[in-house]
Image (cartoon, rainbow, N blue to C red; front, side, top):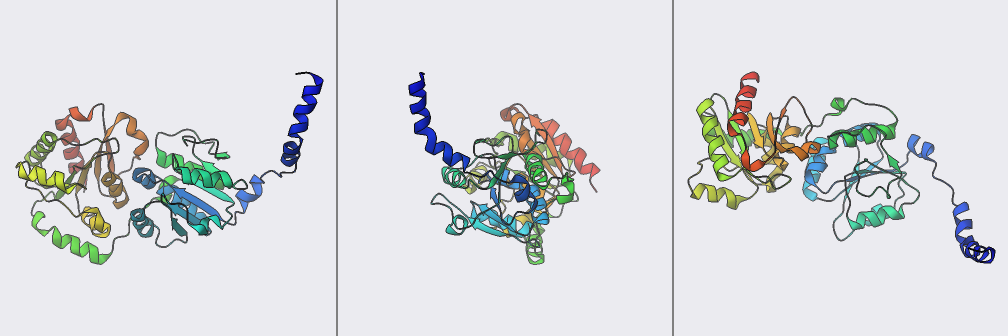
Length: 347
C-alpha cells in the first residue's frame, strides 16, 4: 500500500477510531466489588439447569440484588422449592423474546450458567456492551463473554458453574456448603405415603427403575428391564416400581406382560412426584431428568452413564456412578451387585 492509499485508508477509519478512543473501558474492579444489579441466565436444558443450582445458591447467599432469566415454567418449581428463603426475582423468556423488564434494566454483571444460548439471548447480550458478561470455559460463544473463570477445567459442569461464581466473588468456597435440597410440604409427604401403602410390605423398601430416556437417548430396553427386575427381586426383599415420562411406553410393557409394577405420577404434578420419589429406597436411572431430581431429594441413586456424560455427574454420598461404553450391552449382574452392596451398607 503506497502513502496516498494509506492516507485514504486511515482517513476513512478516522471517525471509527475517534469513536473507539472516546469509549471508556469497563471498570471491572468497581463492578465486581459493588454490582448494583446482577442477571443470571439459566440453561434451557434441564440437566444443565440442575447442575447450576449450587452456583446459584452461592450467588443468592452472597447478593440480594439478583434477577434470574429462566426459559421453562416447570423449572420455576425447583427455584421456588430450593430457594424459598432467599431473595431474588425471576423472569421467563421463550422463543418469542425476552421480557421487556429485562431490556429496561442495566445489569452490572450478567452470569451465564449454561453452555449455550439461543439467538434471542445472543442478540440481547451483544447489546449489553457495558456489562461484565461471565461464562465458563466450555461456553459455546466465547466472543460474547469478557469474564471467564480462571479455575482449572472440571469434568463436572456443577463444579465449573460453581467455580465461575467463586471467581466473580474473588474467593474460593466449599461447594458442599452450598448444597441444594428440595423442600417438600408435609401434606404432599403424607399423600405420597398413602399412595405407596400397597408397595411398602417389603423389608428392603421400594426401589424405582427409571425407564425414561437419558440425556443422549440412552434407554433401558424391555429385556434389560426384565433382567434388572428379576435379579433385584431374587436378591432383595423389595418392591421394584417403574417410572416413565412417556405413559405409552409403560402401557406397552404392561400389555406384553413384562412387568406388573406401578407407573408413578406424571410430571404435570411435580410437587407430588418429588414427594413420591423421596420415599424411594433407591433410584436406578440413565442420565435422565429423574436422576438429577433424585440428587436434590438426597435419595440414594445409581446413575448408569455413558463415558462422555461425566460432565453431567456430580459425585455425592447419595449417588453412585456406573459408567458403560455401550448402553445396549449393560452388565446387568454387575449393576445389580452395586445396588445390593449399596443397600446393605445404607442404614
